[in-house]
Length: 90
Image 1 (cartoon, rainbow, N blue to C red):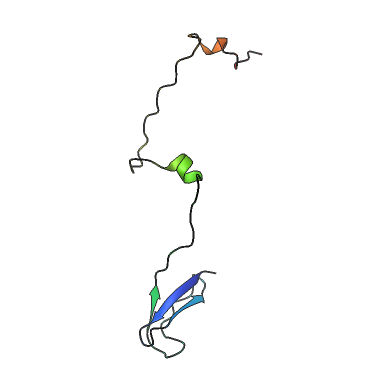
Image 2 (image 1 turned 180 degrees about the vertical axis):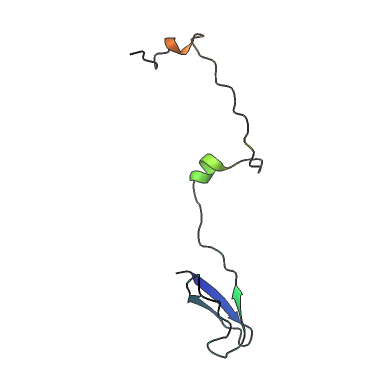
């Protein structure tokens, strides 16, 4: 269940409460019965290290358009793939 944070306009108390997402927001303070406002809290979710974002989906320009890939490097032997040792014709 998500944890929501509220602040009372009357007594200025800040508190957290677990609520279902379908529940209505609280409107009155449980201590002084003043009006509450729901606070926007930071998420604790963080991506660290070289995870999926840095390795596969980040773009340097900030646009989502696909960029053309660089041409394949030329074969060192100068011939086609049939002559490469990694290719087996079985």
